[in-house]
Amino acid sequence: MELRQLQYAIQIAAEKNFSRAAEKLHIAQPSLSQQLSKLEKEIGVLLFHRNTNAVELTHAGALFIEKAQKVIDMMEQIKQEMDDISHTRKGRLTVGTLPMTGSHILPLVLPVFQSRFPEIEVVLVEDSTLKLEQLTANGQTDLSLLTLPLFDDALSYQPLIDEEIILAMPPQHPLTLQPGLLDMKQLEHEPFIVLKKGQGFRQIALDLCNQAGFSPNIVFESTNIETVQSLVAAGMGIAFVPSMFARRQWSDLSPKYAQLTARPTRTLVISYRKGRYLSKAAEAFISTIMPLLQQYQETNIAGRFPS
Image (cartoon, rainbow, N blue to C red; front, side, top):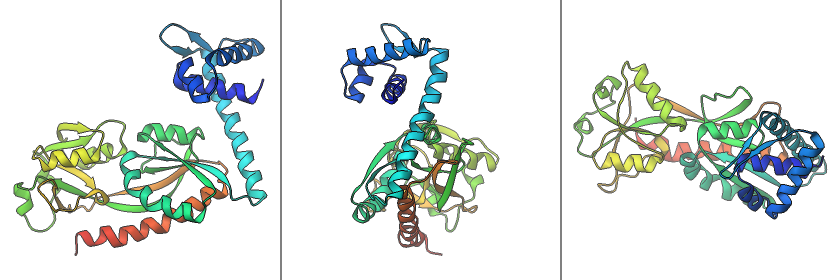
């Protein structure tokens, strides 16, 4: 059994298609099929059911892929440890991020990180909260930017910042005329626009309403926080928004924003698998992102709603 055969099987399981897996692996499809057949013959079990439309894991195949991922991850950790011991500053760091969070945070962090560590290649993986937790727990990302709570017990984390959650309203909404903070009870009968299932911030929004004693009247859902805000600005409803996403109010395309009496927050964290060796590159990324985010919050967020 060869290490590359494990990698081939993992890729086939991920793609559920020989052609796509071969393309990702940069090998010919006949060679991939041959290597898989050789592997199955060696271990004496069928790993995949083949049919004309898709490739599905057998029961034995699912167990094999789970173990194979651990072997590949262990090999990567050994490489990282040996590189660190030899004081090599080259390397590859895979960072998972939520699309809406990464679009605001990574432009602040990556230029600084790459100027300090130009020989470290950073690979970005954008996905939903649930998928990123799975990838991180499997060791397929070294680090991931997520928000609490984390649902996978295999994950550990370091907190980055606590970010206030504010309310976005249409520019002509009656509540925009109210001075001071808004109470959640005032929102009970309002139409809400939320993110779709699988996005961590959706659950935060639902929890805020449930804690206030009502279920939100959801009229629209989107995968993009910017689309949510555009719908709010167009008068289609209200929405909760992390404060760093609040648009500058320079036109009618921008919602109006207000703070809530409860002053709710979400906690941004950098997560990784429990017990996983953190390479020097991963530690460098963490030490880079923490002060940058704290500085950003102080200079760009805190002054948005002066006390």
